[in-house]
Image 1 (cartoon, rainbow, N blue to C red):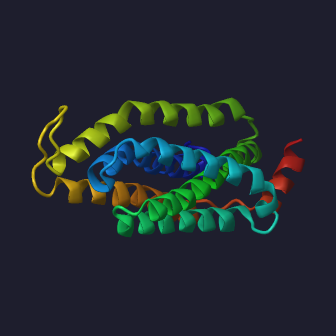
Image 2 (image 1 turned 90 degrees about the vertical axis):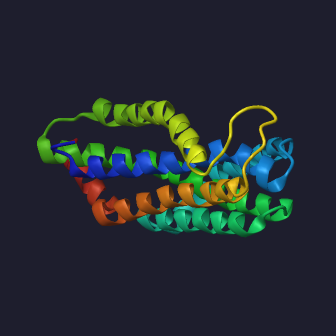
Amino acid sequence: LVHNDQLMWTTLSMGLFMVGYCTTVGFAVYYMKYIFGDESMYVVLVGVCGVAQLSALSVYPAVAKRFNRKQLYTLSTVLVLAGYGIFFFAEISIILIALGAVLVFVGQAFIQTLMLMFLADTVEYGTYKTGTRAAGISFSLQTFVAKLKNGLIGSVILLSLSAVGFVEGEGAVQPAGVADGVWALFCLLPAAGFAIALAILILGYKLRTPDVQVMARFNN
């Protein structure tokens, strides 16, 4: 990271992206139970998200031909934030919830694919800059960030719920205002993660595909 600033910015952005994604999944069951009012519909929501992700991945190659990577990352984040905007006003409308989920998870699938490409670009940049190819180290950072996320995200969710007064336990009576707190956490906390990840990438990531292609030819 010391010798590859582009890898540093990409890793930071990826970490915040994962925070946004995982808190969405983590808070969704609480949203469906305490806002929508039917926890069993969480399974339907997961199904919608899965179909949205697979559909996005199937059309990614065609979409990627129309935009450069930073443009597509920005567009994907806009889709995600629009989805959270819909969640914020959806309340008990399953149609709006499903629409928001489609936008969030289409954007998320695009971003996840782009992150792998950004990492590959940082490998070429690092090789060009230092003369040493460190692909293993670069891609191992993705695993490290994922493991760190797995270790922390549960605590983040529980601490956030505690902050809004949520009471753990089957059949526990929730204090007034908890539903509004869960609603805000589900909509705002993940959206903030995605938005900050975009800001970091726009401000810090400078690699363009033509430049990376030149570096790759030089490295080989």
